[in-house]
Length: 290
Image (cartoon, rainbow, N blue to C red; front, top):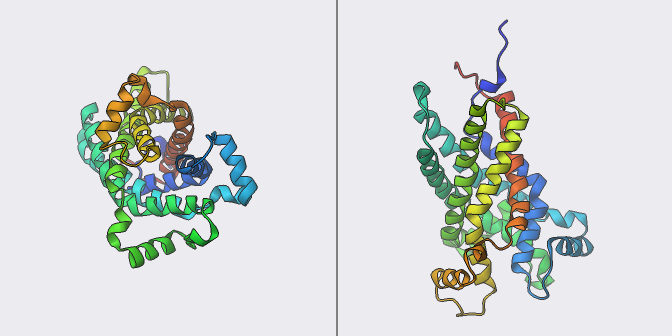
């Protein structure tokens, strides 16, 4: 019986969503703390300080508030972007055709925009569930789980409310997906071409770390502007452009303030997603000859 080379197996369209959901289970506490820091009113707090505060208030399990919504988000947002990217990519590289960088970027941007739109409802529920414990008892929404949250939003606030913030979510998703999917693809290809790497865990780790850095680099300006606008007094910024101009006064590096903490949040999720994805592909994928 011929030995099957697992490295040549092809992933199925839904593998990316599953891998992202698995990664979300591992990195959810970081995502929760990010939301808490972004919505925090009062003295400035760091990531560790906020973590201690959450644990003191709600125990260790408090770090996993809204996990069901986080998983649902990945099963909608990430599954959509990975599915589009991988499906179209398979068609473009038929007959051993190489895919140029600009095609990868364009495809990733389109996939990200679609994923961002599809994932907006789950993202809304995710943020609400994570932030719920900060509210007074009377103000809490107390969603039982993500599906309950979606049902209640659509029923009591209307279907359009579920897509509140879709523009910003899609814009950010474009940047994240270009950095993660196109970045990972290109870096992996370049590292393999050097001859120093084989298609194994070392390659996957190296490529995903660099992809995480690229995704953080691309999304940080948007995140900085979003945070600045959220914390500004009402009417301080007339538009996102006026916010950008204000930040630019401090120089280009102003758009990358907090890069390291941002990478600490996005990096691990990116690395785990691609490590899980590659393992799922190699163990459960379809043999290339099929």
